[in-house]
Length: 417
Ligand code: PLP
Image (cartoon, rainbow, N blue to C red; front, side, top):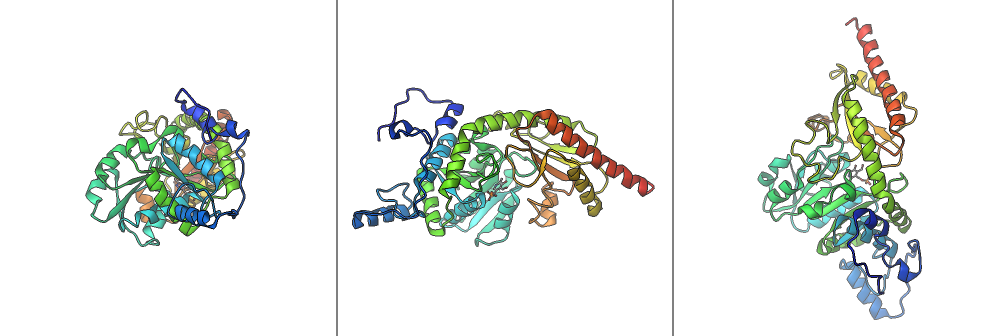
């Protein structure tokens, strides 16, 4: 079908509004068609067989879609939209962020059985690698140790930037250089394609838990990987074989959220900068992790690798409870119980502000030594700033911090210290 010609390269905001929709005019529609078919009738058996071969082999499209596990046009539209935002040839969507991570690892396992991984990573990604579930051997390292960890059988380097939950920034170009010919996977969930495009820095895969900012409304679980067409074909082969599909209704909702992605990201980021600055000066806090704060971006990657810091802020409550886990958990609970507006819940990137305790929830699956080595102490709290007014968010956080400080004072007095 002839598409309407565009003479200008659109800016990112424009792209977000129109990505995956460029054929609407010709189709005579204004919203993406939803195709819920699980199977597709064929008129010509030979054409259906050829289509099946193409799709099982990782092809993006075929004259006959054959069966929903092989191809779905609503999902393909979403994939086009995310690929365009990432500046990628292709993208492949999955039923969750973890399904996307798993598929990328399984595709890599065709090339070799060794993976280099830079901590910190999201707790379940760390667990998937460390558990040996996929039969891969893992070398854990820091961002400057990638070159020394590469072996002849290394199939993939896995990094996450900003890292969950301490917002550590990893220098993508440096890791790509160190990895040489080994592909680099960047989990770019915290950054979104609005703030960071890893493929333009040499990474081979840019992965998102689309459950977060891309979905943005707390009602879809999904994952997506942007890559070259050749790498996407390998991911589709895994998806066809393992069945970790994204449902077309979920794809529709994700696609519906993309036009507002830049607005949501920029608005939440503006609020997060203000909140992080205020938290950094608060006496009930001993440490704030946020890329624009002093010492949080030693390699000066904000402005170079990432156009802004994003909207996730983590901080540690003060108080000398480091050898008394029970008291620390009670203090964190006192903080959460005082909140009236902010939602105590895992996940992030939603319209509402979400707050959670990584050591007790998102990173609980890690063993305690790895957790503490990665800065994920019991004092650490992670906030995903939403779209509420900054003063309302601050009033709620301040009340929580007052409760946390009071808990500390009361304990100190009771202990006669
Ligand atoms: N990557 C990051 C950075 C995450 O924060 C998460 C989930 O929190 C995932 C991957 C996994 O995504 P999902 O929960 O959609 O499986």
